[in-house]
Length: 239
Ligand SMILES: [Zn+2]
Image 1 (cartoon, rainbow, N blue to C red):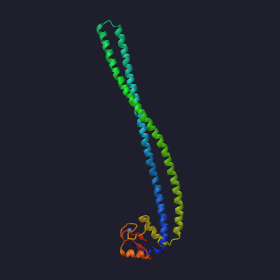
Image 2: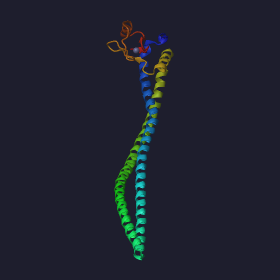
Image 3: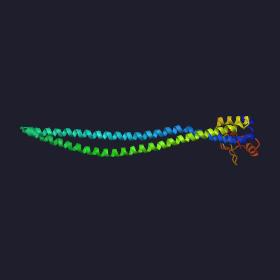
Image 4: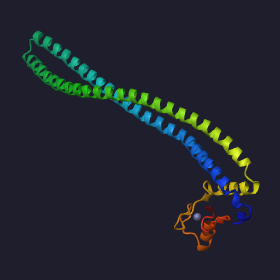
């Protein structure tokens, strides 16, 4: 430690007040810096909710197309039956007549199967439509909720910036009243360690910064209260 000569013990009280401001400034800056990421996370969640609604919409459209396809096939088979029946009533050949009856029976059975499949598809469509309706509601609710949260972020940002301006001004006034050597040392320390750099020592002799027990010699000096004492471990100033 080279700075101990520069830090005047008499300036510690003022530096503690300055440090308290710096801690608040650092907290506000951190909060402000975290806002864009929180915003991004929120927008990403919203995208995922919208995507689920889009997927549900696709499922409904797919089922509707399957039903149309089945209906088209049924339609074709019905007209085939129509043709077979006309042929049946016009033919004079017994073999052809029998063949027509078989074809009609076979095609009717196929239509039965297709109609069952269509019913099943319609049930699935019903379920898919309900699910889609729920997901659309969820999108609407989430959209509203998200807009409220974003507005709150904006208000927080505005309040924080205002507070930060005020604190910065107050800090400048405080700093101007502190002797240059002590202030310089404090600022050099905060630059490398962040706040706090002046930490309390508890009654058992633990450093309030690194929580290690300070040496007996340092402890006596802190209790004496007349000189600047540094923690041997983390080199913060003890008070
Ligand atoms: Zn320490």
